[in-house]
Length: 367
Image 1 (tube, rainbow, N blue to C red):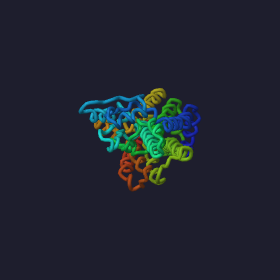
Image 2: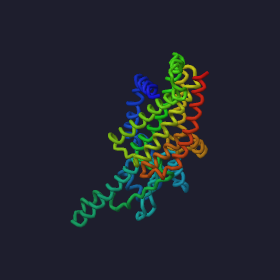
Image 3: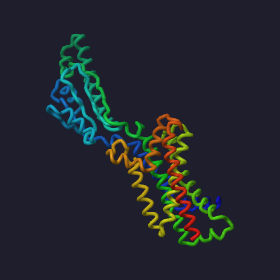
Image 4: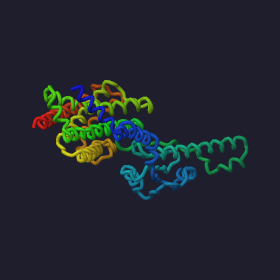
């Protein structure tokens, strides 16, 4: 059994394309997401109340780039709806009264650049108002006149986030590390199914049967070999992101339990797919497609919070959803007791898939 598992591991990492998917691509994606997420998603900012005294003074400093103006009785609801549907990065609502706060509405994880620009504009207006007051105290009315446009101190900006926190409120690097761990662990498992198809085509599986070992040990060796591949992929991303990207994965026991169970799900699917497909190219095509589709449905490519209600229900039928949900809790400080339900679901899925994969594989070998 150990010899079979070790052989599978060596053959998998001997392929240079697998080395790229395991050691390079996940970290390139995490780095790109961590650096550019958020700013690359900023688009237009809605403005309500541009003609109010507050709006006129602040907009003069904010500039007019990427602004969409809303007027009328339904201006606030229209702008808020545009933010909620992702058509705007955020919306600024200027009050009629100077003493009331300026409102900025955005989705969690989006619109942060617009909020920073608004804060800077208000800070600059207030700084100029302070200079005017100093100039007036010194009797220097000429200097005071130069900043007359900023003669009123603006109220502070009050930011409101609408909708649920994306990926539990994790920052860009943490959410990228979490999702890429789930995506590439499952992808590594399904791509490893090709080895089983190649073994059957080349006669290696028949030679295994001539060895003086029970069939169940051969099947166990094949499953353990794929479990080593998927666990190694997940562990590599977890450790590397913790060391190089300062990602806090939380309780190591809870995170480790989630990772190992999800890796077992991926390994079981690998053996099941490799036993049901006859051609290596078919196994590759089906494996990659299935891994990407399940990742998209389960929330590994886009946050579940932005899914329509029907898709959120469908997501719960994927193991990715439960792994992401559990890791989100552990990375937010939860312990193993806080993810007991998610671990129970992953354990049940693992048992069902593992049992099915073992039966199908054993029947194929003894046919």
